[in-house]
Length: 117
Image 1 (cartoon, rainbow, N blue to C red):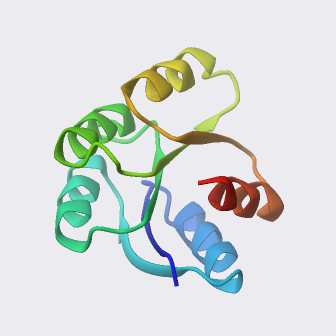
Image 2: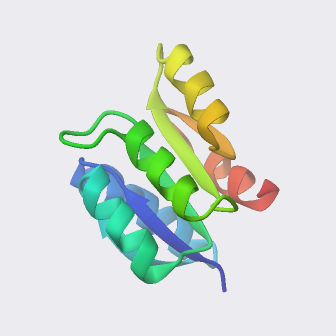
């Protein structure tokens, strides 16, 4: 079973993603409400997939992405961003994100993205 770390400052979005991925055979092994905690949890838990929000207080999703990729260049990180953040998404791909999902998202979009990884 593939493991997932969810990093998002919105608890409702973490819960929504958790429900979707758990229902589809993935195990959520950690949740973080900010980028700094997300980086620390990645290094401790070494999940197969990370979902990373872009806009968070403290360390942003892009900064957390860079730190995780520096630690593990093979990390599979999926950026989750709001519509209209095209430039941020492009930067995320350059920094090492494997894919991105635009909010609002549907269940199938998350599962299809995970399967492509």
